[in-house]
Amino acid sequence: MQKKRYNKPEVSKEQLEWELLNANMRLAAEEKARTELIANLSHDLRSSMAVLAGSIELLKSKSSLDEKQYDDLLNLMERKINMQKAILDDLFLLTKLDSKSLNLKKKHVECGLFLEEYYYSCVADPKYGQCELYSEIPEDFPYMIEIDINAVNRVLDNLFSNALKYSKEEVRIVLGARRVDSEVQIYVRDNGEGISKEDMPYIFDRSYRACRVRTPDDGSGLGLSIAKGIIEQHGGKISCESTFEEGSCFTFVLPIAHLPA
Image 1 (tube, rainbow, N blue to C red):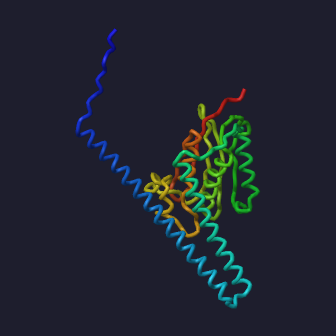
Image 2: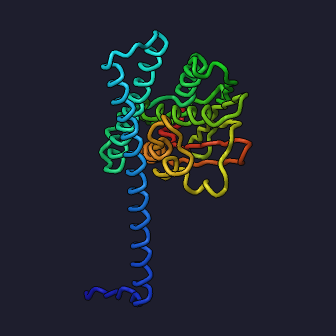
């Protein structure tokens, strides 16, 4: 029996040129973002190194520093070293995410218990001592998710830290969860500065923080990009809703591993 032949639909020259143009534009945008990221992080590292070198020279000169000046100098050096470590750690993790070589150690955990444990660790953390923390985790939330606990904790750390950093004087942070069909939605909501409509499309870009609203000693500015990569490697997705000067709500979705019996 003779097999039927199916001819592939012809693609016009104009369509090929359009697709090639779009591909080139995407590559150019990615290269620009990469160049901006490297330039900004290089500047941060060079500035930090200059501060450390100056501090070491001051200590070696045996200048007459009183106890407070000496302690302030050591604290400054410690901050700069920690900032450098944060940048290098984030770059290493981002490289792992890009190459799909991050070794996630996933295991099944009950979502409600996992979130409660994280919530109460924040309640006990002095960093959030002046914050109003609220839980909207349902009392009965037994859905199992398959996650790398450390990796997802890192996502939550980033969202909580950002909520604290960009909130008003009376900081309010909410951690909550809900089930939607075969997924769980986990969210962190704050009453902070919010994000403008102009910036919203770029917040998960790796160059967003580094190019727009970065401040000294904030770290690499790669937190949201890393969070996006981690959640996507768990088969989920992350998004944000925000009203400028009113607050933001970051939500990430994870598949339910299996429903409770």
